Amino acid sequence: MVSGKPSNLKSFKNSRNFNFILIFLCLTLVFLGKLDLIAIRNVKAFLSDFLAPVTYAINKPVKEIAGVFEDVKSAGSLREENIRLKSEVRKLKVINSKASSQELELLELRQLLKVLPEKKNNIITGRAITAPGGVFANTVLINAGEDFGIKVGQPAISSLGLVGYVVNVGLKTSRILLLIDINSMIPVYLTNSNWPAVVQGQSGKLLKIKFLSSKAEPIDGEVVQTSGHGNRLPAGINVGKIVKSFSGKFYVAPTVEFHRLTYISIITNKTSQPFFSKTFDGFAPLQKPESSINLKGLNLSGKRVIESLDN
Image 1 (cartoon, one colour):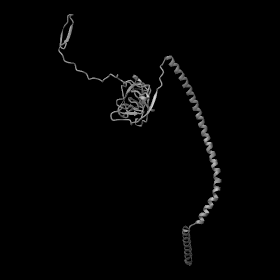
Image 2 (cartoon, rainbow, N blue to C red):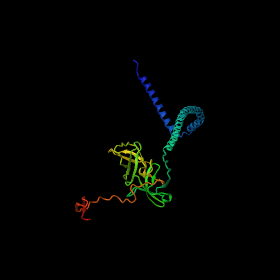
Image 3 (tube, rainbow, N blue to C red):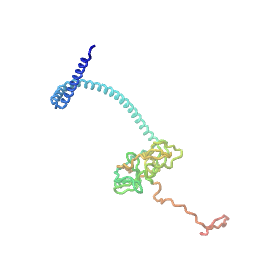
Image 4 (tube, one colour):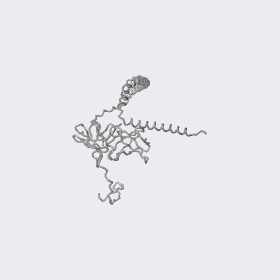
């Protein structure tokens, strides 16, 4: 029989040598980690400096090729953009020629119908010196008055539309009643259906629609403009848009943001007429008839007459 001791001894020696190698490697790594490897860092820096020109020389043609591809793509997109712009220019030329011919036709029709030309508006712009709103009325004060030809009743506008109209004028200032005030009533019309109406402020964000025909069918988002009825205000000024409430009622949302008013323009050659004359003192309550005793009889001609005891 062959004994197994030599083979076991050999395997033990091999495992022992392997363990020594591992320990040596670990100690070496720990030693290298603790060292201040200045030389290694210097070598890395040298290699970086040496390889930088090489890297730049390799990357430059790659970047140039990428730039060429980008130029080709941009040239293609520019060509498409140029074609689109040319087509739009042709369309605009056609529209311009049509507008010119329609303008000439409109002038000829006006001459035939003897339509009165609209007068140009004289506008004075002032700065709002008070915040919109108030305790009893929604008004705003501007720094322009009689010195600039402003009078009571003249309309006030902004870049977005109608603001209100002048209710009080001083030498240097003017007070404007805002469109949203409850005392403000403006004749308007619905631009889509051309139905006339009157909008009244509610001291809130929306305007109430009054005197609108029952046959009218307002559209949500429909533009509302001044109608010019009664010579109150010039026609064609934007007032707002139709909005529909949850209850199904229609209101007008003003286009002007009243809390952000800075500059307000006054149309000085337009003076709105009041709804009532200056001598109007208001509606008096109905008077009850005085009780009296009447006498019936015949006069000399034979006609029946009624006379009162007061006579």
